[in-house]
Image 1 (cartoon, rainbow, N blue to C red):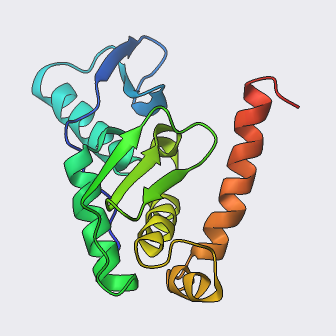
Image 2: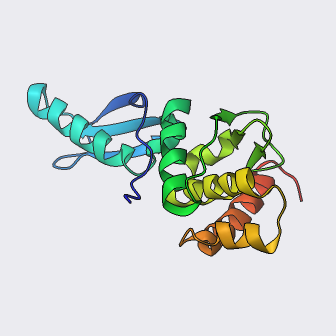
Amino acid sequence: MSTSPLLPSAAPAVEVRVSARRKKTAGAHWEGDRIVVVVPAHLRGAERDRMVDDLSRRLARHRPHLHASDDALLERARALGRAYVDGAAPTSIRWSRAQTARWGSCTPSTGEIRISERLRAVPAWVLDAVIVHELAHLLVPDHSPRFRELEARYPRRKDADHFLEGYHLGLRTAAGTP
């Protein structure tokens, strides 16, 4: 089973900035949901295009689910279900802006899963852990020992829990909530 992250449905927007101070190297970073590539002023044409493409492609690999569609999310959930949750598969799985108090939710009776938009920025293994948690709810609706056994099959479950605790604290701090 491959643990590669979700593939993006569309490439993120790329902004190219020219710098007179840069002489030899270019750099790229995320600003919100777009990639900013800073290139030396002397770099032009095909050479500049190649550098921008290479840097933006490499940077996008670090946060590929930032632009993942609901279809890509469903594909990933099916793969995770086959690998870790006895083949459990949702009838639908969608990104949700309304999910602000939870990372995800599952309605076992309909097989629907919703994943918080706030998770678009987390590493793929953290998103995968949340998806596995919700997939386990398709088979076991409560947090019983059987449920815990299912979700614990994902190898980085505890790491993801620690990450999400810190991420939650960071989101609260950024929002000005104590």
